Each structure stands twice: as C-alpha cells, then as structure tokens.
Length: 243
Image (cartoon, rainbow, N blue to C red):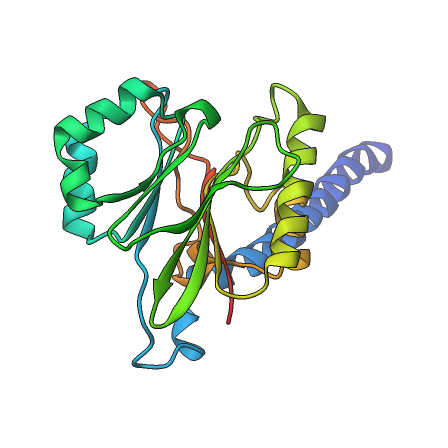
C-alpha cells in the first residue's frame, strides 16, 4: 500500500512543481506585457505640442485596395504615409484612386520597394545610406518649426534569410543611433518585441515604440488577406526618437 501511495505521490508532486514553474513564467511574461497596454505618452508631451499623424501599409506588390487606403488616409487625417512593396502599377492605382489629391508631396521609389506620401512638403528625399537588403526611402518634413526625418522601413524577411534580416536590423539600429531626436522609423520591420534585434533597435537606437506609447501593445498586422487565418502577430511598427 505504501509503495502504491509513493507511486501516485511522486508524479503528482512532479506535476505540482511543473504547474508552479509554469505559473511563475506566465506571471513574469504578463508583468512584461502589461505596461505595453497602458498609455503613457501623455506624461511627457506638452499640451500644445505639434502633431504628426503617420501610417504605414505593405501593399503586397500593389495588390492593396487603393480606394480603401485613400478613405483611410482621409478619415484618420494622415500626414505622412509609408508604403512598402509598391511597384509602378501600384503607384498608378493610388493616383487613380485620388491619393495624390490628399497627399500631394511624394518621394516615390518603386525600384527600391518603399515610397513616402505626405500632406506636408518633403525635403532631403532619397534612399537611406544603410546596409540593408534594399534601399529604405527617407525624407524630411517640417512640423512646428522642427525638421523631422521619416524613414520608410522594409527589412528582409527572417524566414527567407535570418542573417540578412539581422544585418538589416543592425544597419537600422546604427542609423537610428546616429540620427538623434525628431526621427520616425515607420514600416514593415518583419519583427516584434519577441525578436532580440527589434529590442536592440529600440534600446541602442534610442527609439520609442509608438504602439506601447499609445497603449496598443498588440497591434496584429500579420498574416494579412488570409481568409482562414486572422492576423495574430505584430510586424508593422512605428518607432520614434523622443525629443
């Protein structure tokens, strides 16, 4: 009888310890995630600070709904829009849908994957001087008397070549570190905070994740256009260098 009790007790004890360890790990993970769902941007932004409303879209090689995008830009009063995977045909489709009337200032580079559209005049436009798989389009806008650099980001995808993606993230981190304040990195990073290079971009690059700043900690953007699989992963991100 004692032997039988021991045989039952040992697995039960083992299971209890597994439950305790799992509970502790879950609690630690929740503690890390909770701050990302609590807005804290208002703590350090003056009441009369100028506002720059930005958005990003991966056009999936121009297959995005152009008219829906124009309506979104209008309804959300977007000032600067970064578009990735936008070929010449996609640029034509957006022009036909009326985007040129809403965001007339443009830095278009279909040969380089990403482009910028703006309600505000763009200056100093062109490809970013960084060692990335394909050039990242950049330009400046003036907001409240300050020049703000905007970088339309699209890194290589880690499932295709993890080393190439890591090099992209390292190059962006270096540029962010050298850019100083008033810089916005906006686009498709093919990454989330679960990736160490993304966390390194924020810390070493001196950037703030706007999803966390706004309390929108889990902005699900991937996969898109999959009827049997709803977005569950955050890949498109906006990072800013605080003043």
